[in-house]
Image (cartoon, rainbow over all chains, first blue to last red; front, top):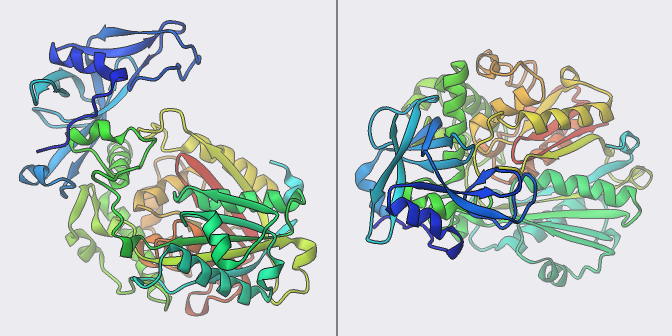
Length: 128
Length: 377
């Protein structure tokens, strides 16, 4: 089985959002900057107040690469597989996979939610 | 950066172990071996060391215990390649401040025999959040650099063959270095035939994983005079970090911190890129060489691919680079062996791979912490 994401309490709203098909990000209540993974303080204004907010799930592919080596046995059957680097419209970066279409830098994408287990849904992307 | 530091501290001893697979030595043993070699090179004894900076070796206390050292200044740093430059610069500051007179910098790496992996469950690259991306198959510093390279290719038209030019040049240099682990030259066709690890990067774009140790002895310019070998002075140095958002590839290929470091290192040395007789560029992966050349101003942003493909990095050409073979072909000593190669080039000790009249040699690393050091007579 492929590795599952760590389920720490701080990021629970992100994973709960993914399960219902919404991309949630933490947003600084002082300066408005979005962030993920969760952090107590805002890296821009260092404010401590924050809230989880729904986002459009849209972004752009900044780059991509193709794995020809499996670092976990569960990935072997998919070699070569692609990983994309996505910058969300809110400025937050994620690594993920593109579920259809060909990756290229500059491609506009939106979140696609893929249930893996009853409790974990991964945030993947598809062309907009 | 205080430019008055230029030439105030010198390297007076360098030492390296054999490189390769050395399962009978742990990281401490490799460090001691290198330190004995560096002291022999300097003509100094253990009793001359009053500063100790340890890198990658797990514990400074145990290292001091097994070598019988009681220094006035002690420091240990994480086993990341960016820390070699940081350690050397710290030694310069410590000596200039009078906190210690003679600093031993000691590095030991038994990663090959210990079975170290740089991807998968033990992946510690970035700032600790890597586990979040494992479910998507994202892992390893190699993939991080593959992402940077793919973007460079799409933005500027840089090609795989241009990376091959870097890798094959360093391999040719390694062929002239009897201590190098990988010495068999390869052609561009052989490069193209090498298997991908994380496309666009192939096996030959990746550094080696091998065992070894490196040590350096630094002291003040005053104390350096009259020692066994001619001092090699730290003529310039600079450091700048780009830690914000650094779990992801930087959009500017680390140009912003490199420009700051370039201003400091060249300003302090009162020299520019064109004055460098040889370059030692941290080559964890071939793309880092391109990013460094652009960031330090050897060529314009985006032009590094064609620039290296014209053969400029070869011995005998404009900027002989990684004359030892570097991390790609000599030894993965995380910057330390490149600093030692810089010192040996300035001394004129490099035999078949010697750069004629090497007066100024520049070390540089492109990473979330950028450092550069210019060594000179």
